[in-house]
Length: 234
Image: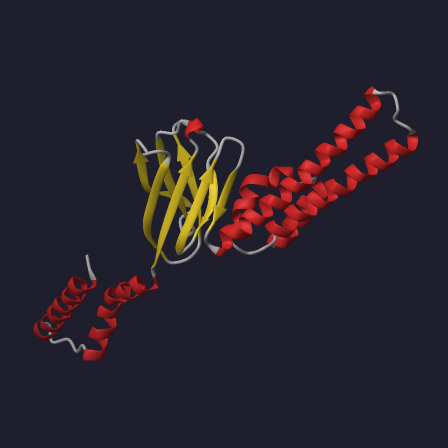
């Protein structure tokens, strides 16, 4: 129902209430009628708070994705709502359009995939590139924040892997000295702490990105940082 029809309905209800009051010899002021009908008209003002969004997805053909569905999490009800499904995508290209009143956690699901693809749905244009080994989000401010977090996280993970490979290589060549071992183990501990601090900092932010990071990575926190996260949530 659009706003004009809603306003018309409000006046009909107001007139009915006034006639009913006259028949029953009740005293209802015009102010009371306007107050009652304003509850119905109020919903029209929400339309002006809605902002247009466009999500464009480019998916590598190697993934052989035929069906793509976008969902958003309704914060008031904590339930997922479908924003549409694209079937038989053309050359790995799909697009979703709609309106939104505030940034929300959004998901992409394709084919029979279990693990969804998380991102922040905001007003404006968001572009998502999904490839077999990597993906990238650009466009909205919080999406860029989320992408920056993922880049930092991956950089730390890669550094830990390189450190571990070096440790294993020295062990394999029997050239691992006590000093080397202590240095490499200390380096791994520093990187692990950096990763924990990065996760905790992002999860303690009161925004949609924090919600996504908690959803995906909370199991990576150790007991100490998990306790600190609980303190942030209190």
